[in-house]
Image 1 (cartoon, rainbow, N blue to C red):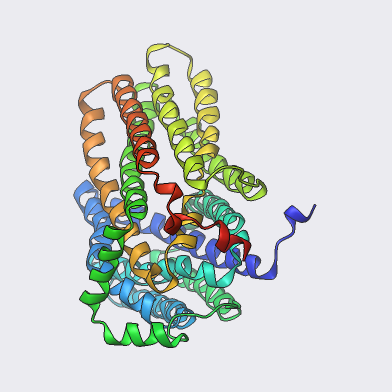
Image 2 (cartoon, rainbow, N blue to C red):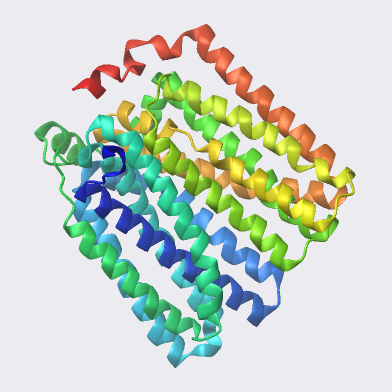
Length: 424
Protein backbone atom coordinates (compact mmCIF):
# COMPACT_ATOMS: atom_id res chain seq x y z
CA UNK A 1 0.00 0.00 0.00
CA UNK A 2 2.89 2.35 0.80
CA UNK A 3 4.08 2.00 -2.78
CA UNK A 4 1.19 4.20 -3.90
CA UNK A 5 1.82 6.96 -1.34
CA UNK A 6 3.47 10.03 -2.80
CA UNK A 7 5.53 12.46 -0.75
CA UNK A 8 4.76 16.18 -0.88
CA UNK A 9 8.07 16.70 -2.70
CA UNK A 10 7.10 14.17 -5.39
CA UNK A 11 3.67 15.77 -5.85
CA UNK A 12 5.30 19.19 -6.31
CA UNK A 13 7.65 17.78 -8.96
CA UNK A 14 4.80 16.08 -10.81
CA UNK A 15 2.78 19.33 -10.78
CA UNK A 16 5.74 21.17 -12.33
CA UNK A 17 6.20 18.44 -14.94
CA UNK A 18 2.51 18.19 -15.84
CA UNK A 19 1.78 21.92 -16.06
CA UNK A 20 4.96 22.52 -18.08
CA UNK A 21 4.44 19.64 -20.52
CA UNK A 22 0.69 20.10 -20.89
CA UNK A 23 0.80 23.88 -21.30
CA UNK A 24 3.72 23.93 -23.75
CA UNK A 25 2.23 20.94 -25.62
CA UNK A 26 -1.04 22.78 -26.17
CA UNK A 27 0.77 25.92 -27.28
CA UNK A 28 3.10 24.00 -29.64
CA UNK A 29 0.09 22.26 -31.17
CA UNK A 30 -1.65 25.60 -31.68
CA UNK A 31 1.45 27.26 -33.17
CA UNK A 32 2.00 24.42 -35.65
CA UNK A 33 -1.64 24.40 -36.69
CA UNK A 34 -1.74 28.17 -37.01
CA UNK A 35 1.39 28.34 -39.20
CA UNK A 36 0.13 25.50 -41.38
CA UNK A 37 -3.27 27.16 -41.87
CA UNK A 38 -1.88 30.63 -42.50
CA UNK A 39 1.05 29.72 -44.78
CA UNK A 40 -0.20 26.46 -46.30
CA UNK A 41 3.49 25.64 -46.63
CA UNK A 42 5.36 22.57 -45.43
CA UNK A 43 8.57 24.65 -45.61
CA UNK A 44 7.10 27.26 -43.30
CA UNK A 45 6.14 24.51 -40.88
CA UNK A 46 9.56 22.91 -41.26
CA UNK A 47 11.40 26.12 -40.35
CA UNK A 48 9.40 26.36 -37.14
CA UNK A 49 10.27 22.72 -36.32
CA UNK A 50 14.03 23.06 -36.82
CA UNK A 51 14.26 26.36 -34.92
CA UNK A 52 14.19 24.56 -31.55
CA UNK A 53 17.02 22.09 -32.25
CA UNK A 54 19.22 24.86 -33.70
CA UNK A 55 18.69 27.03 -30.63
CA UNK A 56 19.50 24.04 -28.40
CA UNK A 57 22.75 23.43 -30.27
CA UNK A 58 23.87 27.03 -29.81
CA UNK A 59 22.86 27.06 -26.14
CA UNK A 60 24.49 23.77 -25.11
CA UNK A 61 27.74 25.12 -23.54
CA UNK A 62 25.96 28.06 -21.88
CA UNK A 63 23.19 25.96 -20.33
CA UNK A 64 25.69 23.51 -18.86
CA UNK A 65 27.88 26.30 -17.48
CA UNK A 66 25.00 28.16 -15.80
CA UNK A 67 23.36 25.02 -14.37
CA UNK A 68 26.67 23.79 -12.94
CA UNK A 69 27.59 27.20 -11.52
CA UNK A 70 24.49 28.92 -10.16
CA UNK A 71 21.69 28.21 -7.71
CA UNK A 72 19.21 25.77 -9.25
CA UNK A 73 16.09 27.22 -7.66
CA UNK A 74 16.97 30.71 -8.94
CA UNK A 75 17.62 29.40 -12.47
CA UNK A 76 14.22 27.66 -12.60
CA UNK A 77 12.40 30.70 -11.21
CA UNK A 78 14.10 33.03 -13.70
CA UNK A 79 13.25 30.63 -16.55
CA UNK A 80 9.57 30.64 -15.55
CA UNK A 81 9.44 34.43 -15.18
CA UNK A 82 11.14 34.91 -18.56
CA UNK A 83 8.71 32.47 -20.18
CA UNK A 84 5.70 34.30 -18.74
CA UNK A 85 7.02 37.70 -19.84
CA UNK A 86 7.78 36.34 -23.34
CA UNK A 87 4.24 34.99 -23.65
CA UNK A 88 2.78 38.25 -22.40
CA UNK A 89 4.89 40.26 -24.86
CA UNK A 90 3.92 37.99 -27.76
CA UNK A 91 0.22 38.30 -26.90
CA UNK A 92 0.25 42.09 -26.99
CA UNK A 93 2.58 42.37 -30.03
CA UNK A 94 0.43 39.91 -31.99
CA UNK A 95 -2.69 41.96 -31.28
CA UNK A 96 -0.96 45.14 -32.46
CA UNK A 97 0.65 43.66 -35.60
CA UNK A 98 -1.21 40.44 -36.55
CA UNK A 99 0.13 40.54 -40.13
CA UNK A 100 3.66 39.91 -38.81
CA UNK A 101 2.57 36.65 -37.20
CA UNK A 102 5.36 34.48 -38.62
CA UNK A 103 8.43 36.34 -37.23
CA UNK A 104 6.50 36.89 -33.99
CA UNK A 105 5.85 33.16 -33.63
CA UNK A 106 9.45 32.26 -34.50
CA UNK A 107 10.59 34.76 -31.87
CA UNK A 108 8.27 33.15 -29.33
CA UNK A 109 9.57 29.69 -30.23
CA UNK A 110 13.14 30.88 -29.64
CA UNK A 111 12.28 32.37 -26.24
CA UNK A 112 10.43 29.24 -25.14
CA UNK A 113 13.23 26.96 -26.35
CA UNK A 114 15.81 28.94 -24.37
CA UNK A 115 13.80 28.90 -21.15
CA UNK A 116 12.75 25.25 -21.60
CA UNK A 117 16.40 24.26 -22.03
CA UNK A 118 17.39 25.95 -18.79
CA UNK A 119 14.37 24.67 -16.86
CA UNK A 120 14.53 21.07 -18.15
CA UNK A 121 18.28 20.66 -17.65
CA UNK A 122 18.21 22.29 -14.22
CA UNK A 123 15.29 20.16 -13.07
CA UNK A 124 17.01 16.95 -14.22
CA UNK A 125 20.28 17.97 -12.54
CA UNK A 126 18.38 18.85 -9.34
CA UNK A 127 16.74 15.49 -8.75
CA UNK A 128 19.72 14.16 -6.78
CA UNK A 129 19.36 17.20 -4.52
CA UNK A 130 15.59 16.88 -4.18
CA UNK A 131 15.32 13.13 -3.51
CA UNK A 132 17.27 10.37 -1.81
CA UNK A 133 19.06 7.94 -4.13
CA UNK A 134 16.64 5.09 -3.45
CA UNK A 135 13.73 7.33 -4.52
CA UNK A 136 15.17 8.37 -7.86
CA UNK A 137 13.97 5.39 -9.88
CA UNK A 138 10.38 5.84 -8.73
CA UNK A 139 10.47 9.62 -9.24
CA UNK A 140 11.90 9.31 -12.77
CA UNK A 141 9.30 6.69 -13.68
CA UNK A 142 6.42 8.80 -12.38
CA UNK A 143 7.93 11.77 -14.23
CA UNK A 144 7.77 9.77 -17.46
CA UNK A 145 4.17 8.78 -16.76
CA UNK A 146 2.97 12.29 -16.03
CA UNK A 147 4.78 13.61 -19.11
CA UNK A 148 3.11 10.94 -21.25
CA UNK A 149 -0.29 11.77 -19.79
CA UNK A 150 0.25 15.47 -20.47
CA UNK A 151 1.50 14.74 -24.00
CA UNK A 152 -1.61 12.65 -24.62
CA UNK A 153 -4.02 15.32 -23.35
CA UNK A 154 -2.30 18.40 -24.84
CA UNK A 155 -3.24 17.93 -28.55
CA UNK A 156 -6.74 16.70 -27.66
CA UNK A 157 -7.53 19.70 -25.46
CA UNK A 158 -5.47 21.99 -27.71
CA UNK A 159 -7.54 21.06 -30.77
CA UNK A 160 -10.74 21.89 -28.88
CA UNK A 161 -9.44 25.18 -27.46
CA UNK A 162 -8.00 26.17 -30.86
CA UNK A 163 -11.51 26.30 -32.28
CA UNK A 164 -12.61 28.69 -29.52
CA UNK A 165 -9.79 31.23 -29.05
CA UNK A 166 -7.14 33.05 -31.09
CA UNK A 167 -3.42 32.25 -30.97
CA UNK A 168 -2.66 35.25 -28.73
CA UNK A 169 -5.27 34.03 -26.24
CA UNK A 170 -3.48 30.69 -26.27
CA UNK A 171 -0.36 32.51 -25.08
CA UNK A 172 -2.27 34.12 -22.21
CA UNK A 173 -3.69 30.71 -21.20
CA UNK A 174 -0.17 29.28 -21.19
CA UNK A 175 0.91 32.00 -18.72
CA UNK A 176 -1.49 30.45 -16.20
CA UNK A 177 0.30 27.09 -16.43
CA UNK A 178 3.70 28.78 -16.14
CA UNK A 179 2.62 30.64 -12.99
CA UNK A 180 1.42 27.40 -11.38
CA UNK A 181 4.82 25.83 -12.11
CA UNK A 182 6.60 28.95 -10.80
CA UNK A 183 4.77 28.88 -7.47
CA UNK A 184 5.40 25.14 -7.10
CA UNK A 185 9.14 25.59 -7.79
CA UNK A 186 9.31 28.17 -5.00
CA UNK A 187 8.06 25.51 -2.55
CA UNK A 188 10.49 22.74 -3.58
CA UNK A 189 12.70 21.63 -0.70
CA UNK A 190 16.38 21.26 -1.61
CA UNK A 191 17.51 18.95 1.19
CA UNK A 192 21.04 18.58 -0.18
CA UNK A 193 23.69 21.23 -1.03
CA UNK A 194 22.99 23.03 -4.29
CA UNK A 195 25.57 24.45 -6.72
CA UNK A 196 27.52 27.44 -5.39
CA UNK A 197 26.58 26.60 -1.79
CA UNK A 198 29.60 24.30 -1.59
CA UNK A 199 32.88 26.29 -1.44
CA UNK A 200 34.78 23.93 -3.74
CA UNK A 201 32.09 24.02 -6.40
CA UNK A 202 31.67 27.76 -6.09
CA UNK A 203 35.37 28.32 -6.48
CA UNK A 204 35.60 26.02 -9.48
CA UNK A 205 32.53 27.47 -11.13
CA UNK A 206 33.60 31.07 -10.70
CA UNK A 207 37.11 30.49 -12.03
CA UNK A 208 36.04 28.72 -15.23
CA UNK A 209 34.98 30.36 -18.46
CA UNK A 210 32.05 28.96 -20.42
CA UNK A 211 34.38 27.22 -22.85
CA UNK A 212 36.56 25.79 -20.06
CA UNK A 213 33.44 24.51 -18.33
CA UNK A 214 32.21 22.89 -21.54
CA UNK A 215 35.63 21.38 -22.26
CA UNK A 216 35.74 19.93 -18.74
CA UNK A 217 32.47 18.15 -19.51
CA UNK A 218 33.96 16.62 -22.67
CA UNK A 219 37.03 15.62 -20.69
CA UNK A 220 34.83 13.85 -18.15
CA UNK A 221 33.05 11.94 -20.90
CA UNK A 222 36.34 10.98 -22.55
CA UNK A 223 37.60 9.52 -19.27
CA UNK A 224 34.25 7.99 -18.31
CA UNK A 225 33.78 5.39 -21.04
CA UNK A 226 30.49 4.02 -19.72
CA UNK A 227 28.86 7.45 -19.62
CA UNK A 228 30.07 8.20 -23.17
CA UNK A 229 28.59 4.91 -24.30
CA UNK A 230 25.24 5.68 -22.66
CA UNK A 231 24.98 9.12 -24.28
CA UNK A 232 25.93 7.81 -27.73
CA UNK A 233 23.45 4.96 -27.26
CA UNK A 234 20.65 7.33 -26.27
CA UNK A 235 21.25 9.41 -29.38
CA UNK A 236 21.33 6.32 -31.62
CA UNK A 237 18.14 4.94 -30.06
CA UNK A 238 16.35 8.25 -30.73
CA UNK A 239 17.51 7.95 -34.32
CA UNK A 240 16.05 4.44 -34.64
CA UNK A 241 12.87 5.45 -32.82
CA UNK A 242 12.23 8.15 -35.43
CA UNK A 243 11.45 5.27 -37.83
CA UNK A 244 8.42 4.57 -35.66
CA UNK A 245 7.48 8.24 -35.41
CA UNK A 246 7.60 8.71 -39.19
CA UNK A 247 6.73 5.26 -40.51
CA UNK A 248 3.78 4.26 -38.38
CA UNK A 249 1.57 7.28 -39.28
CA UNK A 250 2.52 6.86 -42.96
CA UNK A 251 1.72 3.14 -42.87
CA UNK A 252 -1.59 3.52 -41.01
CA UNK A 253 -2.99 6.46 -42.99
CA UNK A 254 -1.50 6.03 -46.46
CA UNK A 255 -1.06 2.27 -46.86
CA UNK A 256 -3.59 0.67 -44.51
CA UNK A 257 -6.16 3.45 -45.04
CA UNK A 258 -7.23 3.85 -41.42
CA UNK A 259 -9.70 6.64 -40.77
CA UNK A 260 -8.68 9.75 -38.81
CA UNK A 261 -10.57 8.42 -35.78
CA UNK A 262 -8.90 5.00 -35.97
CA UNK A 263 -5.48 6.57 -36.35
CA UNK A 264 -6.16 8.89 -33.42
CA UNK A 265 -7.04 5.92 -31.21
CA UNK A 266 -3.83 4.07 -32.11
CA UNK A 267 -1.78 7.21 -31.51
CA UNK A 268 -3.36 7.67 -28.08
CA UNK A 269 -2.44 4.08 -27.21
CA UNK A 270 1.24 5.07 -27.42
CA UNK A 271 0.84 7.69 -24.69
CA UNK A 272 -1.20 5.21 -22.63
CA UNK A 273 1.62 2.65 -22.94
CA UNK A 274 4.24 5.18 -21.85
CA UNK A 275 2.03 6.24 -18.94
CA UNK A 276 1.50 2.66 -17.78
CA UNK A 277 5.20 1.93 -18.22
CA UNK A 278 6.19 4.73 -15.90
CA UNK A 279 3.70 3.61 -13.26
CA UNK A 280 4.84 -0.03 -13.54
CA UNK A 281 8.52 0.88 -13.29
CA UNK A 282 7.87 3.10 -10.26
CA UNK A 283 6.37 0.13 -8.37
CA UNK A 284 9.06 -2.43 -9.24
CA UNK A 285 12.20 -3.09 -7.24
CA UNK A 286 14.99 -3.63 -9.76
CA UNK A 287 16.81 -6.94 -9.22
CA UNK A 288 19.37 -6.43 -11.98
CA UNK A 289 21.68 -3.60 -12.96
CA UNK A 290 19.60 -0.70 -14.40
CA UNK A 291 21.80 -0.53 -17.50
CA UNK A 292 21.18 -4.21 -18.29
CA UNK A 293 17.43 -3.70 -17.85
CA UNK A 294 17.54 -0.62 -20.07
CA UNK A 295 19.24 -2.41 -22.95
CA UNK A 296 16.95 -5.44 -22.66
CA UNK A 297 13.99 -3.05 -22.98
CA UNK A 298 15.63 -1.47 -26.02
CA UNK A 299 16.09 -4.94 -27.55
CA UNK A 300 12.35 -5.45 -27.06
CA UNK A 301 11.76 -2.22 -28.99
CA UNK A 302 13.57 -3.76 -31.98
CA UNK A 303 10.95 -6.56 -32.10
CA UNK A 304 8.16 -3.98 -31.95
CA UNK A 305 9.74 -2.21 -34.93
CA UNK A 306 9.79 -5.46 -36.89
CA UNK A 307 6.19 -6.26 -35.94
CA UNK A 308 5.04 -2.80 -37.06
CA UNK A 309 5.52 -3.59 -40.74
CA UNK A 310 3.82 -7.00 -40.71
CA UNK A 311 0.16 -5.89 -41.32
CA UNK A 312 1.20 -4.38 -44.65
CA UNK A 313 1.30 -7.84 -46.22
CA UNK A 314 -1.53 -9.56 -44.30
CA UNK A 315 -4.54 -7.82 -45.84
CA UNK A 316 -6.42 -7.35 -42.57
CA UNK A 317 -9.50 -5.15 -42.23
CA UNK A 318 -9.06 -1.62 -40.93
CA UNK A 319 -10.74 -2.59 -37.63
CA UNK A 320 -8.34 -5.49 -37.08
CA UNK A 321 -5.37 -3.29 -37.99
CA UNK A 322 -6.59 -0.72 -35.49
CA UNK A 323 -6.75 -3.31 -32.70
CA UNK A 324 -3.32 -4.65 -33.67
CA UNK A 325 -1.64 -1.25 -33.46
CA UNK A 326 -3.44 -0.36 -30.24
CA UNK A 327 -1.92 -3.48 -28.69
CA UNK A 328 1.49 -2.82 -30.26
CA UNK A 329 1.62 0.78 -29.05
CA UNK A 330 0.54 -0.16 -25.54
CA UNK A 331 3.40 -2.70 -25.50
CA UNK A 332 5.75 0.27 -25.73
CA UNK A 333 5.20 0.25 -21.96
CA UNK A 334 8.40 -1.81 -21.87
CA UNK A 335 10.65 0.82 -23.44
CA UNK A 336 10.57 2.88 -20.25
CA UNK A 337 14.12 2.52 -18.97
CA UNK A 338 15.86 3.28 -15.67
CA UNK A 339 18.95 4.62 -17.48
CA UNK A 340 18.34 8.27 -16.51
CA UNK A 341 18.24 7.36 -12.81
CA UNK A 342 21.60 5.64 -13.07
CA UNK A 343 23.13 8.64 -14.86
CA UNK A 344 21.83 11.03 -12.18
CA UNK A 345 23.45 8.90 -9.50
CA UNK A 346 26.73 8.47 -11.35
CA UNK A 347 27.47 11.98 -12.69
CA UNK A 348 28.98 14.34 -10.07
CA UNK A 349 26.46 17.00 -9.01
CA UNK A 350 28.62 19.91 -10.14
CA UNK A 351 28.86 18.46 -13.69
CA UNK A 352 25.29 17.31 -14.28
CA UNK A 353 24.24 20.52 -16.02
CA UNK A 354 26.76 20.34 -18.85
CA UNK A 355 26.47 16.54 -19.27
CA UNK A 356 22.65 16.48 -19.40
CA UNK A 357 22.61 19.54 -21.66
CA UNK A 358 25.02 17.82 -24.05
CA UNK A 359 23.02 14.58 -23.88
CA UNK A 360 19.76 16.39 -24.62
CA UNK A 361 21.21 18.32 -27.55
CA UNK A 362 22.81 15.27 -29.19
CA UNK A 363 19.57 13.31 -28.86
CA UNK A 364 17.47 16.17 -30.22
CA UNK A 365 19.73 16.74 -33.22
CA UNK A 366 19.70 13.11 -34.34
CA UNK A 367 15.90 12.89 -34.32
CA UNK A 368 15.46 15.38 -37.21
CA UNK A 369 18.21 13.51 -39.09
CA UNK A 370 16.35 10.25 -38.55
CA UNK A 371 13.09 11.90 -39.57
CA UNK A 372 14.57 13.05 -42.89
CA UNK A 373 16.21 9.70 -43.65
CA UNK A 374 13.21 7.54 -42.75
CA UNK A 375 10.84 10.01 -44.39
CA UNK A 376 12.76 9.53 -47.66
CA UNK A 377 12.83 5.73 -47.24
CA UNK A 378 9.10 5.40 -46.56
CA UNK A 379 8.39 7.54 -49.63
CA UNK A 380 10.33 5.19 -51.88
CA UNK A 381 10.37 1.75 -50.18
CA UNK A 382 7.63 -0.49 -48.77
CA UNK A 383 7.13 -0.24 -45.02
CA UNK A 384 7.84 -3.88 -44.13
CA UNK A 385 11.48 -4.05 -45.31
CA UNK A 386 12.24 -0.65 -43.75
CA UNK A 387 10.83 -1.69 -40.36
CA UNK A 388 12.42 -5.13 -40.64
CA UNK A 389 15.93 -3.81 -41.38
CA UNK A 390 15.62 -1.02 -38.81
CA UNK A 391 14.53 -3.48 -36.12
CA UNK A 392 17.39 -5.84 -36.97
CA UNK A 393 19.88 -2.94 -36.99
CA UNK A 394 18.66 -1.80 -33.55
CA UNK A 395 18.91 -5.35 -32.18
CA UNK A 396 22.46 -5.75 -33.53
CA UNK A 397 23.37 -2.34 -32.09
CA UNK A 398 21.98 -3.27 -28.67
CA UNK A 399 23.75 -6.63 -28.56
CA UNK A 400 27.01 -4.96 -29.65
CA UNK A 401 26.80 -2.40 -26.84
CA UNK A 402 26.05 -5.09 -24.23
CA UNK A 403 28.94 -7.22 -25.55
CA UNK A 404 31.33 -4.25 -25.46
CA UNK A 405 30.34 -3.41 -21.88
CA UNK A 406 30.83 -7.02 -20.81
CA UNK A 407 34.22 -7.38 -22.51
CA UNK A 408 35.50 -4.15 -20.96
CA UNK A 409 33.75 -4.97 -17.66
CA UNK A 410 32.49 -1.39 -17.52
CA UNK A 411 29.69 -2.13 -15.05
CA UNK A 412 32.17 -3.66 -12.58
CA UNK A 413 34.51 -0.67 -12.44
CA UNK A 414 34.46 1.11 -9.03
CA UNK A 415 33.70 4.51 -10.65
CA UNK A 416 30.57 3.03 -12.26
CA UNK A 417 29.14 1.56 -9.06
CA UNK A 418 26.31 3.40 -7.33
CA UNK A 419 25.11 0.71 -4.90
CA UNK A 420 27.11 2.16 -2.03
CA UNK A 421 25.73 5.59 -2.71
CA UNK A 422 22.19 4.20 -2.76
CA UNK A 423 22.60 2.70 0.70
CA UNK A 424 23.78 5.96 2.11
